[in-house]
Image 1 (cartoon, rainbow, N blue to C red):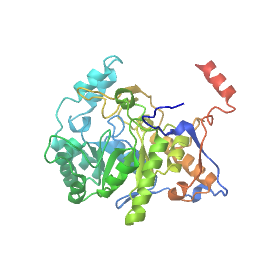
Image 2: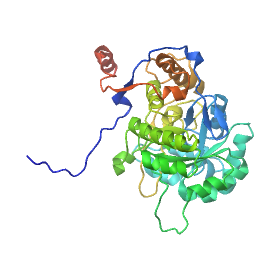
Image 3: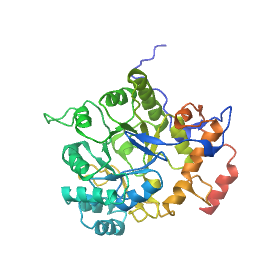
Image 4: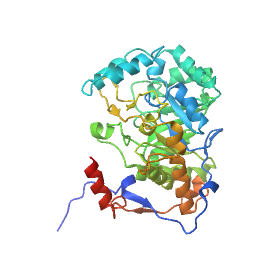
Length: 383
């Protein structure tokens, strides 16, 4: 019997589909090395706070730096549209669920002001913290140099999907290799989910690559546009490009898995998939230091014509230090994330993040449900 074939589909896996197999040796967690290096900057922990207005303002960036990580500030958000952004945050917090998108669109209507871009960067640098900033490709030429002159240390260029080859009506759009040569600071680019695109972006001279399209808790791109690749597969494909590029050139371009992680276990799986760092948004929106007041929303949520995100009430979990380093009294893996990573690395015998890349991953869709009947029953009873 003849069966017509039009397209072939390969399986793709997210964090809930896989598990990490224990290693043949184990080591003490305190002997693990988890540094993340981007350009000439090295961070003690490989966790990056996403460029969400509900997460990163100058005060949060400084607090996160003091914990050893990197926080990225959105240069196209509320911090650079208002002298006193607290007023906009209050307006967003008061909005009903039904009106939230319209209120966000209104809050983001005022223009971005170059003097505020410079002021926010200066506020971070005044506290001797590393300053990383994020822009979209459309505003990169204008804002990147302003931020650099104000003292920014790293530039993130982010869009829902980024490629090295882009067709537009502009005769001279953003050309990444020219940007990387022009900037004195490392340029991290995203987002990407595929081997070929990742390889081409690395060939442009970028210092780091963000991986992920639509996995974040607040993102609705997968529903609105239908695009995306589950994060484990996306990370593995981009990690393969990184390793091939390194073998060919001797230049190592770190990849950062961006979004889709809620627990320490998810974060560990990202590193086992090949990540050098992970970027988290909603997790850090729950920190007491975050400016979002227990809410979280995405960079594309206030889009004028095609919003791709939702405002979520995530609550305030506690201080940033507890989320990162504990101690914790919860057992669901949502706090003490750094030590969860160290403990997992010890169980698979990985001393470094690069050794963690070699940890065995298995397809295991029942990993979170096997033997957990009583947990589920008690959870349903509580709800």
